[in-house]
Amino acid sequence: MRARVPAALFSAIAIAAVGCSGGASQPPATPAGDPTAAISAGLKEWEIKLDSNVGLAGTLTFTIKNNGDETHEFVVVKTDLAADKLPVVDDKVSEDAVEAVDEIEDIKPGTTETLVLEGLAPGRYVVICNLLGHYGKGMRADVTVK
Image 1 (tube, rainbow, N blue to C red):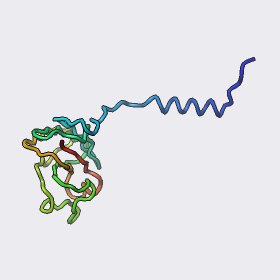
Image 2 (image 1 turned 45 degrees about the vertical axis):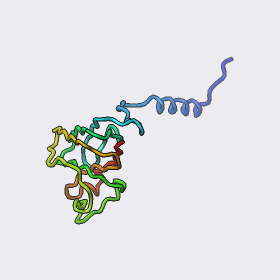
Image 3 (image 1 turned 180 degrees about the horizontal axis):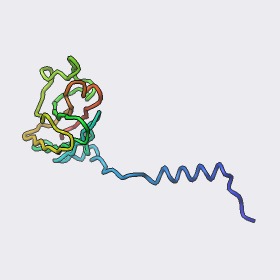
Image 4 (image 1 turned 180 degrees about the vertical axis):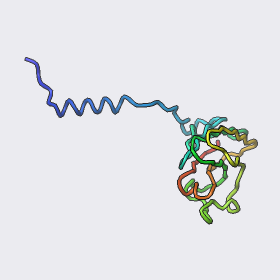
């Protein structure tokens, strides 16, 4: 005689197996402590996704793709503040109150731009879209340069 597996236990096992099978695979972010000289950034309403949050001091290249429906910009700021703690005035980060390193403005939907930063010192940085309201809606990410 075969042992019967209760239906609830069978369902729980099936759900766990599906949960562990993964889904669409995403390239893994570079782990902390493993700096890279090139970071890919995806922009869309209302997020900035980086394939790594650890960059290499010296020359660091950002390849920025606007996957959204609106025009965005990509501003690199050197700061000891967390990405969500930058000073905001009139629904934008006050670029006079932070150390803006470089930027690319007017990144149209569906386009890709490249920003090469040379002589970049180790430290904490934040990348943002600083168009009116975009930072406040979540278009920001922390980057550590080693």
